[in-house]
Image (cartoon, rainbow, N blue to C red; front, side, top):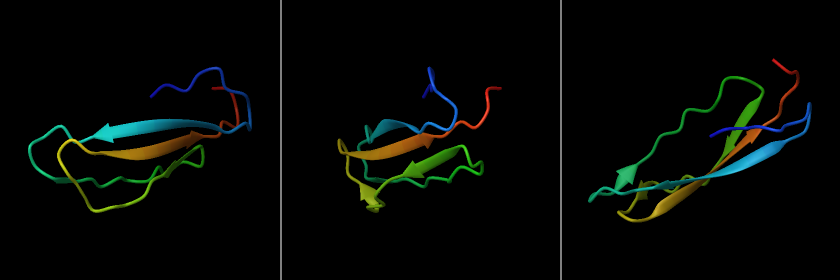
Length: 66
């Protein structure tokens, strides 16, 4: 993921589509960000069947240019 063209204190959200390409059902575990600049939002459903996907929204809120 690449956040670019952002403005200070303006929220920018990108949708990430995570697809299970294996032959087996998979369980995902997301570790939440530890900084106040990033947030994640998703619906925890348990196992993801082969060929199905999970949508994860990643939000970036910049506070300074660095």
